[in-house]
Amino acid sequence: MKCLQLTVICLFLSVISTYGQTIQDLINEVDLTTLTQKVNEFSGEQSTVVNGNSVTILNRQQANNDLAADYLVEQFEQLDNLTITDQAFNSNGRNIIATQLGKTNPDNIYIVCAHYDTVADFCADDNATGTVAVLEVARVLSSQCLDNTIVYALWDEEEIGLRGSSFYANQAAQNGDNILGVLNMDMMGYDGDAPGTPGDNEFDLDVRDFANSEDMMNDIIAVLNSYTFDLSVVTVNPGTFSSDHSSFWVNGYSAVLLGESWETNDQTPFYHSSGDRANTIDFPYFHELTKLVTAYMATSGGLVDIDNGITQTPSMLTANQSSASYQWIDCSTDLAISGATSQSYVPSANGVYAVEVTSGNCTERSACVVFDSLGLNDFSEDEVEVFPNPVSDVLHIETSINQNLDYNLYDISGKVVLKGTTTDRLNAINVKSISNGVYFLSLWSSEKRGTYKVLKE
Ligand SMILES: [Zn+2]
Image 1 (cartoon, rainbow, N blue to C red):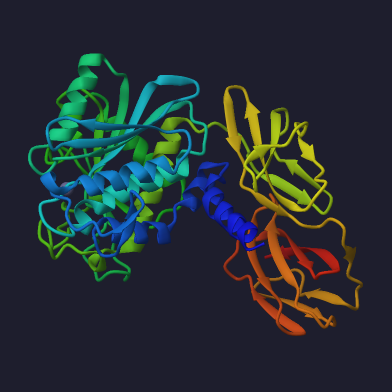
Image 2 (image 1 turned 90 degrees about the horizontal axis):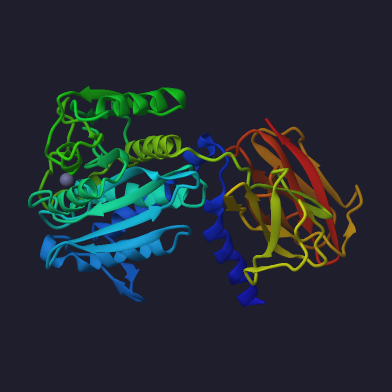
């Protein structure tokens, strides 16, 4: 039983990221906790696991950064739909590159990139931030079908002459690769204020008149203005050559540098020193910038409009996307369920299920959802009461049953947004932080169950 529970928890952690239907949904998936943890891991502030060993990444300078490179390979390996290239370009240099092939126009390539090497220890801002942002964009987008190809690239030896990106860009130009835009991130975690306090949230976009770089900058600003970000753009034209985007400029490609604002003297005072540590990073600001980059990459990549959500009733699971092909999956084994190929699925046992939805040449997999309503009787009205409804802040569960009840709160697409166990006759669940909308509260004891529709407003 313990094993089963662990499996279920692991599945939730690993698949919850596959959720996302619109660009706004994908923006919402960019996760501050993940960003914070990975910057701390990658800049050596806390240990992590690489090659199965608990390690601390103490050094990312060029001849000593193989552990960092291995970490990046493993981060990409955890994601679906990526082809990973460990590109050695000299005796020390390793670019770590993951490619997500476009479903409609695979020859149209957009690159989101950052350098991962350093000049000193730690170097959280320069450039664990850019590196971790690339990983987070990959985490969010790799579960989605996109028309165009996205290349997630992490360059080595930037600090000693843009060597990794030069090697790649020269080779791409020789091959005639159709790279339509390169978004380079270098130092994106400092806002001239104490970490965590509200700053002016200005950031720089550096461009020059190479290829369509200026159009690309305008496209990024259009995305900035289409969704809500706590950011203020500063355009720098002509922009600096001093990072990897310029390797693409000189090869005739469109490229933009995004990062904290040197133009307004808002950059880190710990530049190129071992004082550049994670506790100087303004993570909410870094989070906003990563959300913007995710939205731009999803837009330029051409997000294919497939809804991979599931709607759940006590007897049935239904894929939200109609007019598609379906394959239902048992998440506890990760195997396809024989014959379960309709839009709806009626489980014969309680369990954890997902669906793969195929439309055209695009297949997306849903999150795993818990289905636990079979074989139990409903609670009577005097046994369980759920109130108030609608609810804004605190949902109460009042029960006359002499037993603790487990509960899940599902959103309309069947995703669990809250779970727990009652401990008293009157229980309070804080729902203030969840979005407004319709939810289903599923409650169960060892003998009985109940499902309650709840409106959050
Ligand atoms: Zn840098």
